[in-house]
Length: 254
Image 1: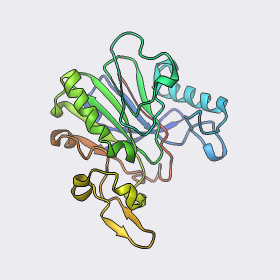
Image 2: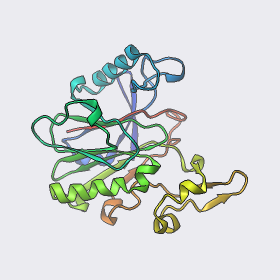
Image 3: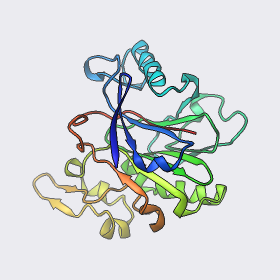
Image 4: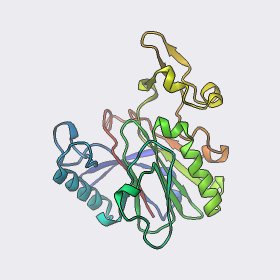
């Protein structure tokens, strides 16, 4: 289950499944508690959407204070709606410029690094291996999900770190609700045919707008069965305190 928590001025969600990982600090932050105004109100974490840079920096500082994580320990990738995974080693430098960070997932076993993804409609997925102490953050939009990004992260954890599916825990965070997720047939056909037909098919065809309605979450749908049993999911309208909120960032820190 998820719990809504107030961390100083920041309202966030926490997944109970990560209580099994005493080495993990995590949060799914909401739109509330920041300095941004107008269309960006209020906890906007992006410098690239037209918000005042000073306001965004204040938001990051407020988040760092609320979670007791130094600002310098946060890492956000560029997020390009692909399936590239950024693997960060336990030691040493891992990038030299922002232009190198075109990824949609981060995996690491490095201590004291807060790996983050920013989401709105897209799905944030946080993953942790409770035995190997490996963590991952995934930005699972429909394009990345059609490419099987979440499953690729799991396979990478198995191959690189020796993770076992039964040790992997995951939380699928707040995202657009299934009731609101409409796509056209061209988009639906971008999904793997077998999965589109039987696992998470956009099967409910609404003739009025030529749209299909997603009937199952796409993120995580192609992951191993043992892993799927350990997934928690939180729909965006799950709690009145966060209804209609924007969910700009999800993070884990080892």
